[in-house]
Length: 96
Image (cartoon, rainbow, N blue to C red):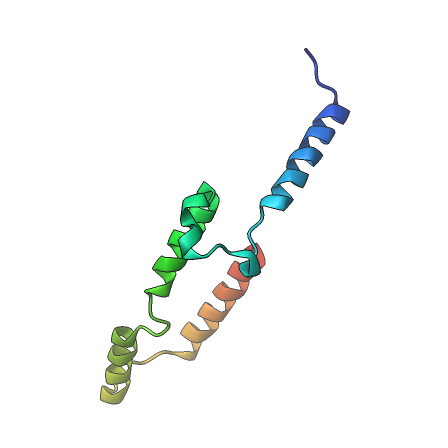
């Protein structure tokens, strides 16, 4: 059976419309008590959020190491290194 491009387009549009309804917005996120009634996608998001909640915003071990190296004069970064990293970041942002 051959499927026409029109039928393919209709199927894709219908699949897209149904997925729009499934999107989870932050204001609609389910509470922890409702996890038993969550879809697998919602459960995955909830697990990821729990894991991210346990990660500190500032990694004190790295910051303290850098502070110590700066204070001792062991941390040196050339202007060329800074410029190189800025250009890499710019290129990476363009890829996204």
